[in-house]
Image 1 (cartoon, one colour):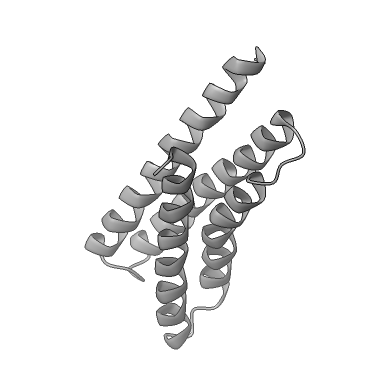
Image 2 (cartoon, helix red, strand yellow):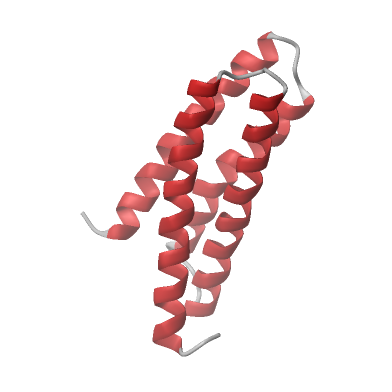
Length: 120
């Protein structure tokens, strides 16, 4: 399995977990934070999928950079949900761990591609 497929699979698994947690939040009548998390958490994988058909290496880097920004935003919403007692420490740690893994993989992929293009 190539790295791109691992990134694709992990981002999809993360998105599924975000959908599940969002449903639970909405059942508790928490709509604002849940929508924000749903948007950013599912956008990571969507941008990774878009990168698979990028028009150029620069477009590829751009798509992965957007995914990275969305992963960072997702961490914010997850922290906020934990600190406001909407999710447990255990659920938070699980999701943050997955998110951090995605962030590390995205950074590595972006740096590798940039080094091949000699881009700063």
